[in-house]
Image 1 (cartoon, rainbow, N blue to C red):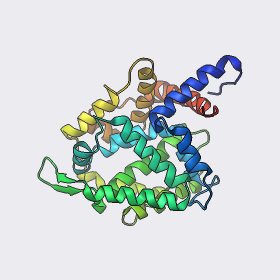
Image 2 (image 1 turned 120 degrees about the vertical axis):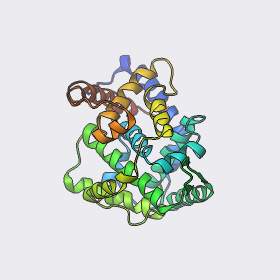
Image 3 (image 1 turned 120 degrees about the horizontal axis):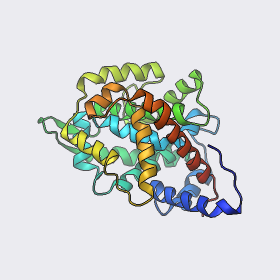
Image 4 (image 1 turned 135 degrees about the vertical axis):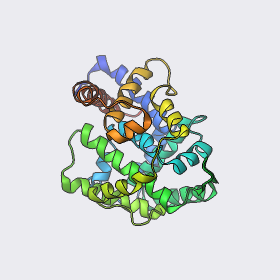
Length: 289
């Protein structure tokens, strides 16, 4: 969906952009963008790189929801999230921290990206506990780090290919995975996947360890049935969430108790999500104010 500009739409466009930016990046979005995008210095990636395109597109809204739903199926990872992330008490704060990390490591100067990674690794070392089945966990466990990364990379790429302005070619898609691996390796992920084939292989290897748990179903309910939004924001979010569910494999939907409706997905859900993302993409091109 493409909308034209003009005085009549300028006000609504700016209000929508401000509302989205406030949720995703917090009240300091303008200053943060200047610090990340305008600061001098070398970057790991540039405008010609697939990771730059994927992480700067509105399809990330769908990809993020899909990633959270997929990640919830790892019982130990979900236990760590439930015990330590504050996803219920401070969902927007958690989202803003993730958004900031992705922005700094994708677009920021190398020293800032390295500092951000150091901060996350330090936090991971403090996140320890015991899952419901008695399994002890630590967030810097290589297996958990690998699962979180694989679920995110797969979800972000899947959402961009389905809803982005131009799907990446096969070569570009593999480059995207390889570029995310550069950051993941610095976070402590052992031998992160570097192609779509690697992602598929890693997901298959994780599958025996994945299962629905009360914590996973609780997270899915928060994301899909009772999101922390009110008023007019709720219907739009539900369209994005439905788009995310439409991109989940049938076995994931089955584990989470979500129906698989391929005809509805193709004819209703994805067209609606594509239209809404087009509107968000248009709004977010408005000048920052």
